[in-house]
Amino acid sequence: MNARANTPAAIAEELGERLKQARLNRDMTQSEVAERAGVSRLAVLNAEKGNARLKVLIAILSVLDLAGQLDLFLPSQDVSPIQLARLKGKARQRASGQRGTRTGEPSEW
Image (tube, rainbow, N blue to C red):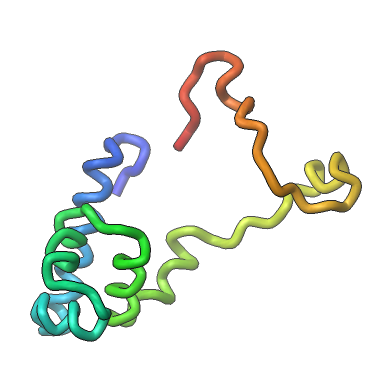
């Protein structure tokens, strides 16, 4: 999946397809996944279409034994040494929102 070339909707749809294939590979119905995750079957269906709330997605991933993959999806972010020096050892709590918007260019996200 090339995340930079796709729209957020296309990426979500691709993730939904992967979620569906993972469920099928485990020979589970949407109802079984929903029951074990503590969500409705409609929530599972929506997740497989790429339209899920984060907590629902995590619950489904847990049922499918894929929650461990989240570290690969979004690794833990350490504080930059430069940022830490600027803050004199204190961890940053808020973003200014000024980076990437000064030139009018969209952020990389």
